[in-house]
Amino acid sequence: MTSDKTNKSVNKIKRIVLPLSFAILLIISSIASLNSLQGPSTKTDTGEHKTERDIKKIAPVKNLKVAFISDQDTNENSKRVLRLIKAEGASMVVSAGDLSYEGGPGDWEASINDILGADYPYFIVRGNHDYRRWSEYQSLFKKRLEKMEGVSYEGDLGVKSVITYKGIRLIFLGGMRSTLQKEYEDYLTARLSADDDYIWEIVAWHKNQRLLQVGDKEDEVSYDLYDISRVEGGIIATGHSHMYTRTKLMSSFKDQQVVSDSNTLTVEKGMTFAFTSGLGGKSIDSQDATLSKNPWWASIYSKDQGANYGALFITFNSGGTANNATGYFKDIDGKVIDEFYLTKK
Ligand SMILES: [Fe+2]
Image (cartoon, rainbow, N blue to C red; front, side, top):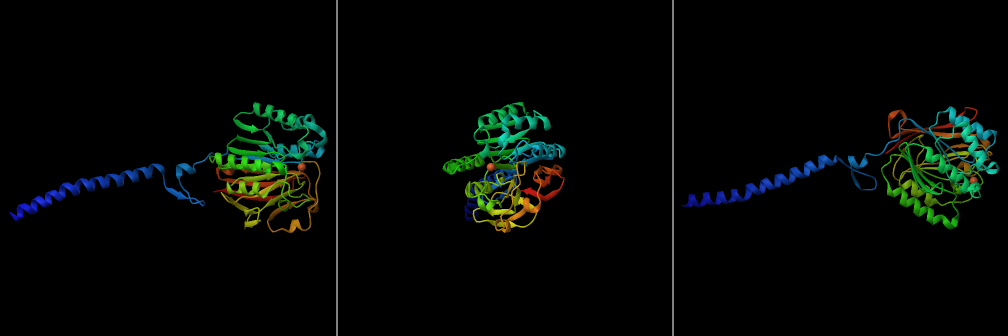
């Protein structure tokens, strides 16, 4: 009798425990297979967990060489810079404003067409000297974009606009004035956070903050523009100061916090660098003795260093590694005055 009771109890436990164990095993294996579909999870610096699938991003085409210039004009030196760009085999130009001064849009367009070609991918940002005839520049820019294969663009071109081309994403902010600053900051924040699909993003505008140039410019934009770009890991391209300067890797532009002195820079969310490539042909400025001593400068090429006109070249997906890029500034005498290596995390 006792034995019967025991057997009944054991059977009852089996009826409950076995299906329960099976259900638990089923849940565990479902979770495991879901994880394997998503790939291993990585915790980012911002604290969010991302899967491998999330991290897979759009890469630039292999060895995409971009020439960065500004403060161009249409004189003989300006043309020598365009010839240098052609000789270096750059795939595209980003000009951060002040396009032609007295020459005007017609002469400017003609010199680009003569040297680089009417279909050459040439992207422009509005500078302070471009205001008066901006509608003409913008219309030439639009016609050029319409002839290009594989480009997409949106917004007010060269003023508040986003362009994607050959696997990189460009955000252009043109010729800010203090009264409009907030509007540009909001636009930049929205556009940077709207699309996280590209490995490389470049934010370009024309003017500077006084401490982020070494010439005679005052605070003409805002630190927030720099730091909004930094938070998203965007490279910052500017002009206006007629020389070449590049910062070290920075974790704050407002407080000028340097991450590293190395010429190998790991760009990621929260850390980037800014440069001014303002030797496009117009003139060459002297450096300020105090500003040029600031410890966040990795490279300065001004009248004081005997600078000549030239361009910054950055090759993305260098050697077929999508997250790598190499940069150098070369002048029209063939002198390389800055070289650096980038990795995007
Ligand atoms: Fe300017």
